[in-house]
Amino acid sequence: MKKILALIILITFVMVSGCKKDELPKESLNGTSWAAAYGDYTLWIHFTSDVAFLEFMGDETGNPCSTGVCYGTYSFANNRVDFLTHESTSPFDYAILEGDGSMLNLTYKSGYTRMFAKK
Image (cartoon, rainbow, N blue to C red; front, side, top):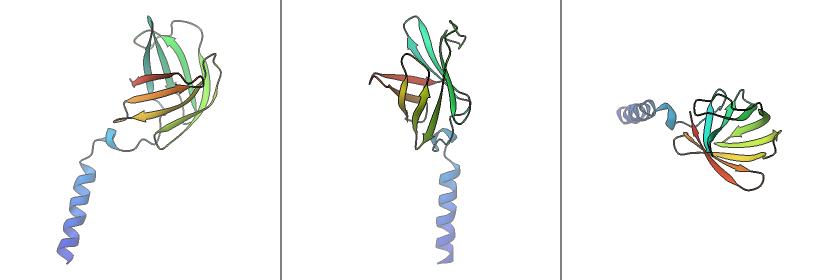
């Protein structure tokens, strides 16, 4: 019986330690950047802390193309982002982290959706 229990524990340990970090549930977006095509530009979201983010139009590498940087606050749990405040003419409502955590399916307050890729 002890050998079976030890074998089960060993198998569980090997299965958990063999997972890629990206496959584990996300606990924080702090420090991540996300991009989506927007005409000739790229729309960027940077999560600057566990509760704050900024959003702007930029080039493909993340350099701002205008002075219009918008700020806001958010909460994050169970792969869902709820945007609490967002000083923008097109404010965000919520977003769902999808797949292996590399895509963010964002819904605006207007109901429009846009897919962002993790950069």
